[in-house]
Image (cartoon, rainbow, N blue to C red; front, side, top):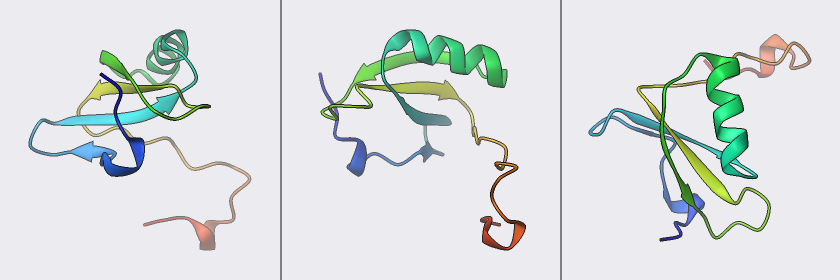
Length: 75
């Protein structure tokens, strides 16, 4: 079943899962390994570029980019 990424929250506290888009399931595996996150599963999306939603256990956030000025970072 494909999901609409624009309607799906990134973090769901009720299920304690986080979602991040990727181009294919292999990228989900790479993301999990690189970030040290536990990949639970992936789902197809309707997005032509980010074709899958990687679903991870818990609250997952990427570290801030070193190229993003500190005053523009979300708190």
